[in-house]
Length: 626
Image (cartoon, rainbow, N blue to C red; front, side, top):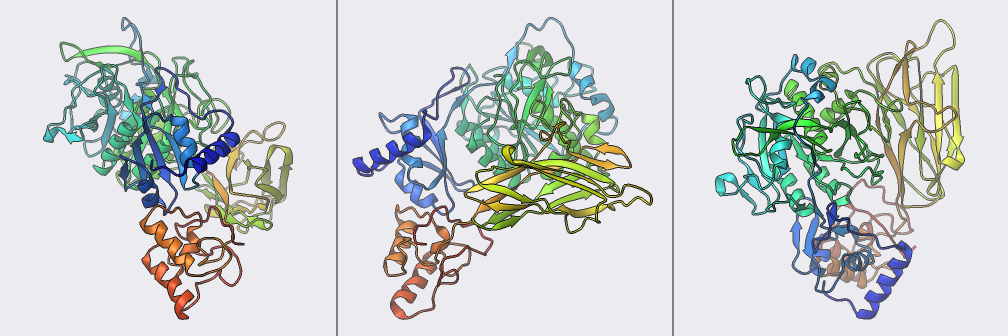
């Protein structure tokens, strides 16, 4: 990085370090190790300014990420503290060196028990996939194998060359051949094993040049972006290191192109808490064993979306004959298994969107553990038959919380909607929030809900949440909520502070715990759930770019420095003088015209500080002029 004054940097590093406490990054040998490189994501509008401060960087315009080497003598934690103290980065993290998440076993006995567990045979009666659907495996390369057919042009993500351009995708480690076989080994050919989606097309994107199979997040993320840009439907990664913000950025980019990104949860038996499973676009896959319980080694937690068989999985492997098989264990195999189920679902209905396939995949799981989604199994254990049964005429209900913008010191109303394909007689659920950011004020009946005969809204103040129990009528004639999409509740929150809080459904509040449940004629339905949020918009004065409580010649200059040099800007909305949702030279000229030539004033909020009422991609993380 181009150096700030030594004193300023030291002060910033000391300030950030005191707020963080312990060093944020530590290596775990064989799980995630430092590579000497970093990944960062500047806040919106700050990509050019951030890149100008970093030496030898690689900018990815499609995601806004920057990849760069550490300076000589600098540690990962020092780099993190220095950059985050500038206030213009969403995250800064190591470009971890990560490793395949498989545990080889002695391949003496066993068979493909997992197909019986996930009801593959019943699913194959409906579809075995088709060649128009593609699973892309980002792994250690692949060996030509008698039981693997349907290859597309492979890609070497380290040399960034397709096979047709000379890129080498041959196997440097058995892992890539094994994960490919789990997803798509050829079925009904009289030899070997059968993949979940045995009629689909396959692409290998080799991510390693090492005999150990190790790679870095940067290479894996490049491979995933490349697969999505090729239009591949399902992208599978079976490496450690899933719990990093930069992976979520890449998953969001892949989703924007219509692809699903699957990643193995890992074999560390740790509680994964980076995000709530429905608040990102990455599908994290834990593992189960032959007893249909969590595999002892599998990671778990709110970050895990679902689970699949991961112990003693027979699949294709490398070997001298090109027709070798072995049994291995690890969440390495639950991820391609989930990708295989999704690929068959997509084959059954190619018109489905990526979001719809994810929802069908989750709702088709066999529920395990606590009713509904839980922190051991996520939505449950994969079921090919269960998911295929939902294609065409889904019978699942969906609860959704809106995402709204709040203002500190006011009340924020947050609609909760129910999409129901069957008439509903009642429902119950809980919702969690951050009590430091908002406080539950009142649980209001939704605008579309008929006046219920029984409505119990309970505020669990100390636990940061509330529960609702609703029965529409207590006697004949019974009132029902007809099939459709309805606002069923509108909780009102007092907004206390910022910057935001997630609003997530829960079945942990109450004694006994209140279930997330839709009641249809007395029969329980477990709905899909979509979380929401309350985010705070800082008050600001449009045009006061430097935050000194006035608009003068210094403000357009401050904006120009941001646009064309290295100056960060913390309130982008203040610089958007014409309120068109973007920052450019026109905004600077607008401000020059106002300050020096009696031109029109910036648009509101201008005469007094206020919030931005325009829905755009700009934000205001900090403003000192109000």
